[in-house]
Image 1 (cartoon, chains in turn green, yellow):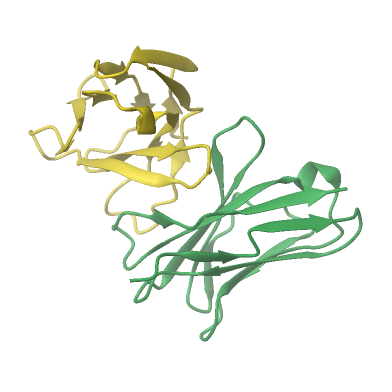
Image 2: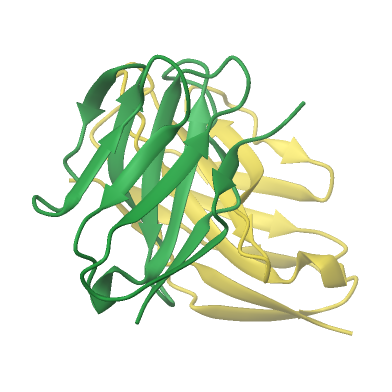
Length: 113
Length: 117
């Protein structure tokens, strides 16, 4: 059974470029959560999606950040015009239903130069 | 707003000994569940244990067990027979109401556990 997949594992961008982070949930899972972990901090919730729907984006910055989870394909977290403060590890987690345990992917480490 | 507090930024334990990591949380819900996750140097988030609030019995997974005190809103993790592979950051996490339908996790700030050979 494949777990939660994230790619790329490492991403380097220059200020002003775009970053696209992908998350493929576990087989049979239709709920995806994105979290951000700044250096030496805990994980902070960003957005919760179900297939084709954003359920809760209360943790996402209002500008430059967007997320989607299409009917087919992985969930995408998109960061436009990246700044150095966006450097962090971005994790996604998936569940089959809303009350199940969240299983995490390996994360994407974003470094903005 | 829900909060999760881990008051021990760092802990160390001798190999084969027992260590307890503390966690307190704030909630007005009555039905919920709680998690401990570990994050080793690889930075992968790995589930350690889950506790349902309605259960009287404390959850146990091999060498890992919890001391869940619902009235005190306390959820500590006990690691018995500590092994070198247990060295990691440990995060307590609370997802809110089990019936709410949106279980976004609130994490504590973590406890860094060092195992002394």
